[in-house]
Image (cartoon, rainbow, N blue to C red; front, top):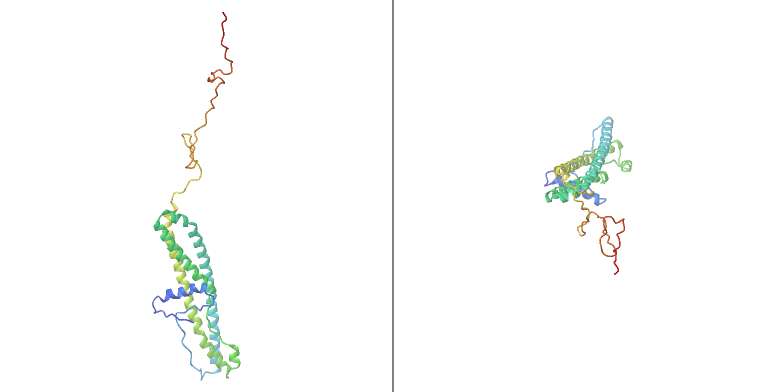
Length: 254
């Protein structure tokens, strides 16, 4: 397992980046912040009661580490749910952020990047391999006697890796929460500006002049309709009393 010491440069950021990359590279080993010290004591001189105490404490510590692992996964699942909701909110406001101005676009991009990075950490905590020590039963069965002494030594040697794994996972979880909070704060910074952006009106508004305003730019506005003009067959306009026939012109004969 790779180890990145806390005193190295950008150690915490590098560990988090390793965890995010583990989502796209199955089987990759995620690093820890330290390597446990090798246990070299042979436990000679302990009584049977002492061995029993060591075995009991070793089992209890391993059970506590597994319980901490489940708690970290539960917290990561909650962070995953919050991150997905945050991504949905950012996607819903992307159109207004990019049409409002360049600075809102830059802030939106940074906020989306932080939210995706936090989401990657949550997914990695749920799916990446967690290294824990264990006591190998076949090795104990075929090993030298006394068995109690060998089991006690096995617990003493295997406890350290679980402690380092839990410590690293808690740090990654904290960094993911900080990234999600920073993303939400950046989006909240531009929200008052993009929420007040003018919206295009889809419904036509009445015009007091009577000219239609919903016509496209290439067409000619239509004027209010007027009654059709009719003319008589001889080209004269009809008289107001068109319902009464006009008298025929009279002719005089010599």
